[in-house]
Image: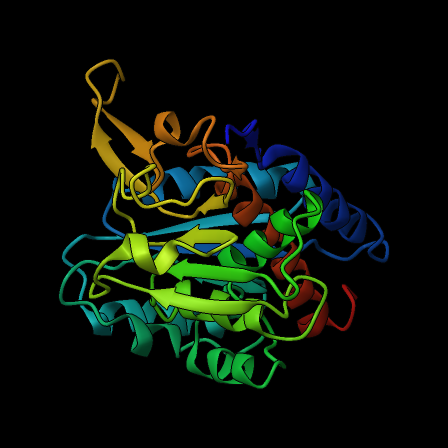
Length: 298
């Protein structure tokens, strides 16, 4: 049975989230400063560069201060931790994001744990991740919340549906699986988690209504593994060679759009799908952090 594939664009979802953040910042008491988000990255280039640009544009569009903190590619775990401690102790900074993955040799979790649950705006510190299991995290990861907001915006139900999450990272895949399986409007799903050690992926995905891929493997999802009529949410982000691009590279997701068109019920493109929603959700998280730290923007 042929299906008419719906393209789930992130722009209208992100505009809604940014509008909420903009309104909250505009309503702050006279004479008070807007929130400041600091985005920390180690080295340059790589897939995170796309996300970094989206963050900066999103922050500027809502009236938020944005501070890019660039550390050398040869930074050590101790160097990154020191920088994060400095930002944690800076009263003018309300939200801090550590871009990941980090270069080999730099341990992510000890670095993320330098942030308080309030400033850990991406919800990746041990305290927030632990609280997420109990359903009471101060902040949940922006990528995971972005996926839920996208599903909500396009009225794609998850309750009692079978949902597969491909990827088990503690910063994306596992938090997303917890949120989808939890109680709530975009939850109550029966969740299957697949990963790099999963064999016979086609059979694992055969009865899944929604597939969320966080694998970072371009072309992973094609007609050979995706069941016809399913919804594919592509969280994967990789850099692949493209001689037609000025930089010689382009962003690519896990889904093969050409293969899924006319096969899947709906899917998100890369770029233009989950990415803009994630950046906008980060702004909402940052506003929440600002409100928690300052007592409502005072």
